[in-house]
Image (cartoon, rainbow over all chains, first blue to last red; front, side, top):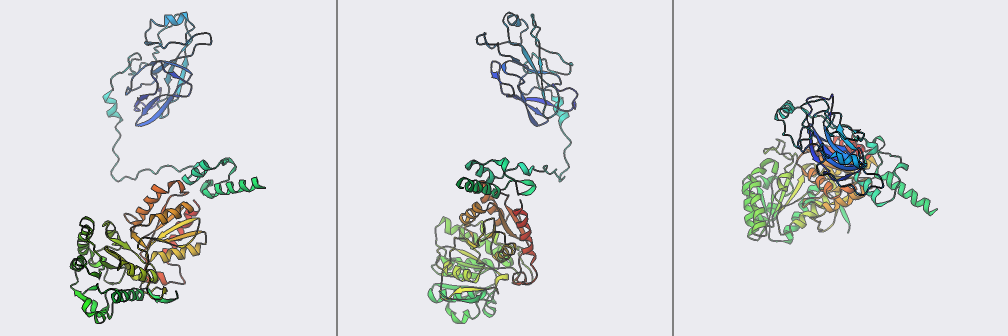
Amino acid sequence: MPEGGDPETVVRIAAWHRRPGDAVSEGEPLCLLSVDGSHAEVASPADGTVSRLAMGVETVVAPGAVLAEIALPVVATEPELEPEPEPAEAGEPAEAAVEPEPEPVVVEVVEPEPVPEPIVEVVEPEPVPEPVVEVVEPEPAPEATQPAPEPQPELVEEAAPEPEPLGAPRPEPGPVDMAHFHSPAVRRLLAEHDVDLAAITGSGRDGRITRDDVLAAIAARATATRA
Amino acid sequence: MSGTRVRYRDAVAEALRMEMHRDPEVVLLEAEGGVSDGGVAGVSEGFAALFADRFVSLPVDGGSIVATAAGAAAAGLRPVCEIPLADFGAAALGELTRVAELSRAERIDMPLLIRVPLGGFSTSGPADGALDPETWLLGLGEVRVVVPSSPQDAKGMIASALRHPGPVCLLEHEALADVVGEVPEGGHLSSLDEAAVVIEGDRLTLVAFGPAVRLAQRAARELNAGVEVIDLRTLQPLDDATILASVRRTGRVVIVAEADRSFRVGGEISSAITERAFEYLDAPPRRAVIPAPDAAALHANGDTPAGVRQIKEVCVELLAY
């Protein structure tokens, strides 16, 4: 989990979307992180079966920590893989050595940025697999094997921002990308008619495609079809 | 039906005169002083002599005028009174709340017509401090609030109000008093439920009421860009069907707000549109805030009044959205 980010940033597990034994495809959301109050999804880096969640919901995630392990699917010949109930046990992997067990994939989050990029570390299947627990920089990281370390209250305090002075102007939301903004009227027309948006030049503000632009495209197509 | 060109204030007077001749239950309650000058808007001049037994002069107190009228209405008469809300409306409002409550809870017919002069009739400024007190009336629910913007509507709405079983407040803006318009000869009735599309268009809907309608019409004509103008005509009930039908066609809407933007009719309309015509909107509903029209602004032929300029600016911005 996050190396080198702002040490003040508190990242927690907000929710797990998968449980041990669940199948997951590459790119599917695996868990939701809460980063200083905003949220970021962590996508699965590979197809496979979740074999272990390294920590529970609400856990504060330290930089470098392992979030979960994913067992890669067995190749063709192998029958259905049973999910391992306790994949964290160091003893278990012995079995893995016998069968061409899936390689454990360690999902690790590297940056404490609002949208942490999951890093995939593919651990080579060792004949005598070591425990998957990967100890990266021993930050105040929760024990990887421990499912739900207690929340750290002092971090919460640290995270409390200076209260804004009353009446301070709030920042305006950033400009909307008008060229890709479709009004409710435009969206309704798109749902009702089969229109190729890419073929329409927007005449609205900053190139926005207006309702009239879509209506004109529909009319033009009708004329062309009739001709 | 042939028509004649009539001033707004004369259309009001004519309607009252015709209705008093038609219905012997119609009585006129006026604040003291009304006998000589024909009321705040000067329309009832000569009525005291014409209808001596149906003309009652009361102290200048909005509360007691409305209370007396309410009693007369509950007893089966059809009282007409004139309450300049901005000047002594706060007291009248308390009594009106009771009228609304009696209509609703007790289901008592309260055929009561309150003419509400707005604008600068009194030069000393509004004593109760409210420049647009119509919003005070809109929360009463059981009280109809109508705003004729033309002499024809003024005459027709008074005739309709004096056939309506419940209380009606008819807002008469001073700026409109000398506006001249075509009025059908003889009597006619005008709807107390419906808005009117006064200029048709297909690219933007402009919603206004009272004197602002004339400014909106002028803005629409000068823009010449497919701007439709709706004259609300009635605020309570609000004819949202007409507004929504128009916005569903045009996809854009500007609501004219006089003097104040917030907590006024415009916000209510905007909310109805986003709730019930959201899928048809091609741009966010906007409010054009204009200064409360004065008579000079409505009659100006040369210079463009500030209100018209402001309406046009918002329309241009929204048409380019």
